[in-house]
Each structure stands twice: as structure tokens, then as C-alpha cells.
Image 1: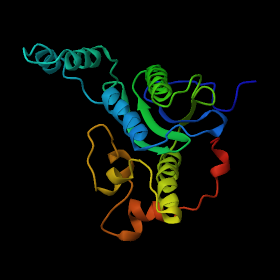
Image 2: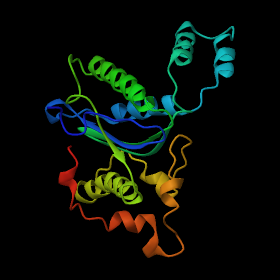
Image 3: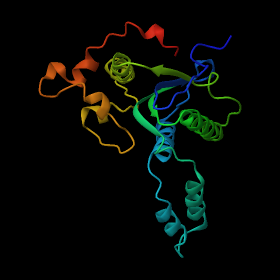
Length: 222
């Protein structure tokens, strides 16, 4: 029998909570560079690709062969800017969460296949290991109503907030975008934030997250 949420029914314009953890619950992010590489991969996949500008850069006469190869690699890289919207993300030492909306039925499957394979290759190469990095295929849960939308972003962002309050360490997430501390073109919080207001602190998104109690974490298989 397939593991819970491993069998995926993708729909056009569907909202999905995507998540996975390391094999045997091992860490998949060991340092700041690992986090940065994963986030940069997301940026490359979800930002618009300016092919003309990349081609111009590759044709510059003084460019090094290494830089030209890097640009050509970016030109060949698959891009999902027009197919997928990233609403929120959270990276923890042994797992990750993404909240995505897809415009075409198979866009998320193609993105995750490429992202997970690429990051595994990077991680194994840089940490002198071989074999699978993740505990099976990533999981996907279709979000079907506003309550689920709001809960999943709160759950994701509260993880980093809660850990920081206990250990003094925080982990990468889209929470700064939701609080207005950072603007990132490929992270889109507006749809969630439209349910809140900053005019009344008790009705703000920050209050919504900070007052969260982890009372249904057992329903999420991480």
C-alpha cells in the first residue's frame, strides 16, 4: 500500500503542500551553504528566465570558459515561472515544506523531480556520500479551502519561530516576506496576506503565527 500522501492526484490550478525529509530522518541541510543552494535552485526554477540577456552574456568576448559554461547551463535549465507560484516555504535540518500553486496538472511533479534530483547530486558531491537523500518520494497534499491555506503557512512559519525561541537558531523560510521585512520576486504571500490586516495588531498575520499552538502536528507526516 502506498505511503500516505505519496500517491498524487494533480489538478490544474491546484494548491499543494509539498514536503519530504531525509532518509532515516537524517539531515539534508548541514550548513548555510546547503540552505543557500536549495533556495538558489528554487529561485532559478521560479524566476522568469531572460534568454536574450543570457545569450548576450555568453557572447561577450572576455568571458571565461567557466562562466560561459555556467550561462549555457542556465539556458538549458528547465523553468517553471509561468506554471508554478510559490506561496510559502520552510527549510528545516532534516526536511522541507513548500506551498505551491500550479497552473498545469503536471508542473509540480516535473519541478520536484528536477529539484530533488539536482539537490541530491549537489549534496552527495559536497558531502562525500552516495545513495538516496530523501525518505522516498516527496509527499503532496491538495489544499481545498481557505482554512487549510492559512493553517499550512502558519505551521510552516511557526516551526522556525518556535525553534528560534528555544535554541536561538532560526532556519530559512518565507516568513520575512510575510512580515514585509524582505521582498522576493519568486515568493508570493499576497493571496494569504489578503486575509489579514496590519491596522489592528490582533488581526495581523504575525499575531496569527505567534499565537499558533502545535496541536495537530501529528497529522503531517514529517
